Image (cartoon, rainbow, N blue to C red; front, side, top):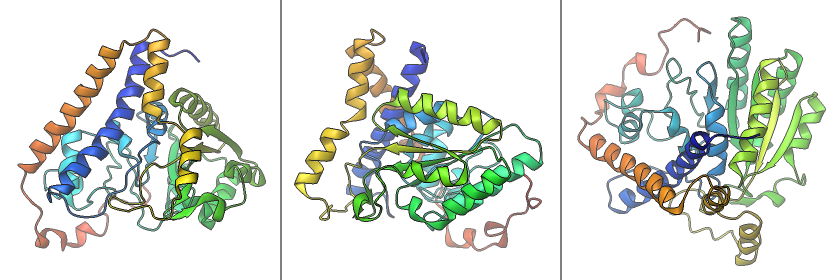
Length: 328
């Protein structure tokens, strides 16, 4: 499928936003300005570049803890303020980094603290959309570790039975926390499991945002017709499970092999855009600088915002929803 220059540039900017935001977090953490645990998605940014442009205003998305490319949905300043526990940010700063949510306006669903549990909740959102005759599709993302949880298969069975508008996305990045994929699963492609539920399963090379976008558009088109799908992104995580993880579980031999199989998606896409005659090297540098400045401005603004205090988190309204149950 052919995409315009504007669409391709948007994909590139989203990839850069994911990469540069992670780098900014690392820089600020080393300065002692950030607290908490952060999870990066180094080398798997093509996922966001291909996926995020597919999310329309009626759709709902649940990222996972390495999806900083989902910032393309958000106001960057409000996201950073929320991450820095500032009251003017999303969720009044209570959500931290990867528990931010905005269901009503952004249709950004909450990430569960239990890996793989949110397959079930997000399937419930898809059921709610169907019951309310709403046009959206739910996109729910987890890693290959989360794909080993039984909730995924219960969810696919339910979605298949009730023809729900949902796409399950597995980011198979070669390692679940500290366990290489080959030691947790004997399937070369996890997407093959979807056939047992009459759900269409597709695996896509995760370094090509164009291929990911095409696969995602097809999956969402089917989901809108009540045909749930499973999309597996085959990639490799070139960083630890969390910022500061020394990756002692990764051998140099495996790292070299996986790096050759899954090269840097940003460097690769830059070459593709230049070979296609879409962008010059100078244009690409300009786009990257634009994204970097946007991130820097967001942090500068967020640091000036009022801090969250302990007594602000104690009310029952911070735990229980005040909205009507089941209403989106």
